[in-house]
Image (cartoon, rainbow, N blue to C red; front, side, top):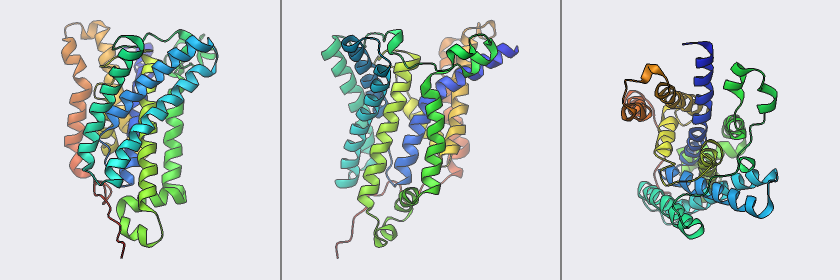
Length: 320
């Protein structure tokens, strides 16, 4: 394997780990506040649709202007946040089973995306985004004369933003009063309540933020890598992101390492599928690599980690 091949694999790893990073951070915030979010997959799906559809419609209305992909990306986050709000209402206010609510969100996200695609575009897929409406590659011009560096660092803006959010999430959770309150509510909500922390508000904030991040994750796939929405676009990325969160012990930096690992499995799958090294391997076996690695990671590390103490438990405020 030559240096260029290694650079291509590393660059592909960064590209495909990005949606997982957004999804893993979504789980980090939600579960650190005590709310299990199985619905990341559905939130990513609706974000993928909202970003691509709004990007296409905005481009049709306003032409090739620089803010179209940015606004589409923001709309994707808002769409994911609305589904996060729905999960928060069910889980926090009505104290529904959080796992069942998350599963419902997964079905609802895919269903709403397909329904709206049919109503707006008369198809289950959205039209392909024009090049000008895709998420940009900010370093493309600077690295075009250096093939090796370009293979690694010529990435979409969403890649750099995801890594920035990892650092920001770590700072918020472990260096700010808000982060301390989020973690306190996830560990000992009654104790947090006695100190004057509004458990419901913190959980609402965290779950809605979780939806926004998941929406960004879906858009980072549909508006950059693929440039359109289709029903099978989000196929397990939300669940792999949850596995990355568990592998990372519910911490942003740990989740990042796990996402890089899972992104590398996808990169290796793509590399083998396009070279002689993988010519004799079934494409079905190659496509299984990320999911098989996920299973082994959960088997190997799932029993060695512990979630926040109150994760998954509805909180009932004592009114006495």
